[in-house]
Image 1 (cartoon, rainbow, N blue to C red):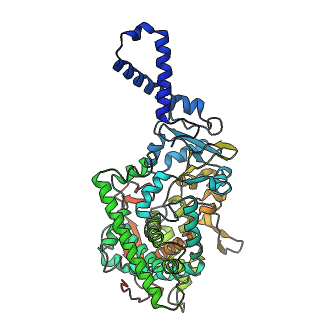
Image 2: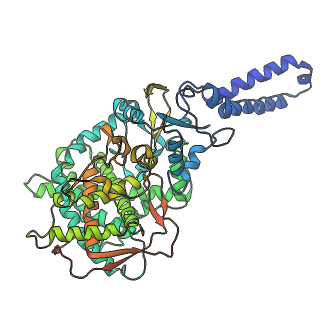
Length: 564
């Protein structure tokens, strides 16, 4: 959107044209005596549009912007940075261009790019600028209205896609429910579902040839989230593989040729405009979103029935939300969509990226190291499954998970908008300025991670003492906490962080124990990331799962009935 200090575009155009034509008539009166009224109006419109274009493309970004002296304008050899943001958003790497900017301007607090439609776009780089935006002045910024409106179609108008008082309402109701008790419960459920995942991979022939692993990984996460957060067993890995809700959720998480364009252009258009387009694609999207909300209502009714049938205090998120009544039923349904899409999609994307990294020729040794460590630790244990802390305290597993999340954050960037005049790193930020947190580039910034910032190195996250004893660390050796942005920082950090990591750890550990995972080396191209909001490998990732005989950890025979 345009800066507060700007007049609206139509007013700028009118005023510029009026002044220009008035001067022209005053200086050249005879030239205009012969013109008709229609010709004069046309001449006003043409010259006014030209004056407006000159102002928006040249005068404002280089001479009038209040940010021009504080944050350098990225310049790639063009006269103006027209659609620089859109080009960077649509590039396959989802961050390589931004990383080159961060490296070039590493001594700056922030940089800016400019678009004639939405004006200045500020990208914070330094810890000081990030701290101001995410902690010190976090209330001065809200989520980009256009993107929030689009994503909330499937992601729900809940804690992830709201701002201001709405965000506060959801956070107060939901945040206390994501406790360590929930993390432990999610670990156990995820481990059980990870065993089903390995069985499903074999049943579906993934040990023969090379296949895209994401659809199966998505169903694993969906089953875990459904059972652990909603008391609902989807059976997405079993009998409900082709059920309508599962297929809609998978389709919503699957980018197509329109989704990237919709995601990118929602930054540059008024909120709700894309959803109101009378195109066949948007009509289909709106129908699918309504189907999901109807399904969410059924899940909520099921949770209420469970509460009525049990005298015990509920231990999952949905049943507690229904019992505590801090949110309306409509709000809870929106939250269900958030758990199912924003939660399940990001976690399954991280799992797919982890398998991509672990099957690269330079990283396959980490599979062997992790498998050996798991077998040495858990062979002959009395319990039938490792506990949450058992897996969380394995240094090499910790390092693999952290490096995956660092190198391939499921959400590579987050746009915010200043909702009032504020400041960042001492620089005035006018109301309406777009702030773009480019997480992918920040996580790979050599300033924080050194010269091998783009390489996978799990041992960043492991300290080894003089006796050779390994202990995990939480900083990865980065020079700042803001070098790792995958779960954001400050009051808006991701409340599902530990639940997601527990789900990822269980799957990686189970898969590495049960399979030797390899990739199709005939595909020399890098996996193509799909999506802008949530990005996963969509092409060129084909894997083979070769079973390992006699796994060392006792398997869990658990029944998975459908409750609804």
